[in-house]
Image 1: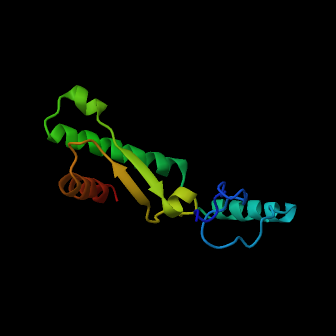
Image 2: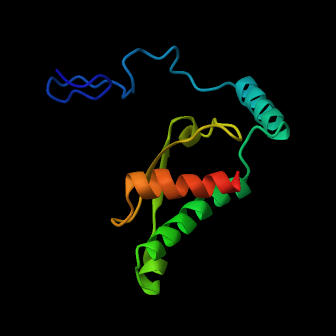
Length: 134
């Protein structure tokens, strides 16, 4: 028995790949009307300020970069190591799908340098930095 939605090559049957456990409502693509209405909706949402700006996204990245440098200095790393230290934010959920709004929560995984601790540095120092900027 194979995974749902994957091609089963063992018995020669080929099924269209699908994700999830239920059948899609339709396999048809969008109509011209659907595309037009989608563009109109996106324009309305953009005009209403419901999309995060590029500046907000860049600001989020800068905060994390600054946080890594602050904790690296606090732990006594030399300046070269401070400058090389980095963190990466991986997003998922509504943020990753691009369907979040300004001020919405962001489901993230933050991977930092080995010297960063979860409790003291992430939930402590990063929280304090974000609170000051709020």
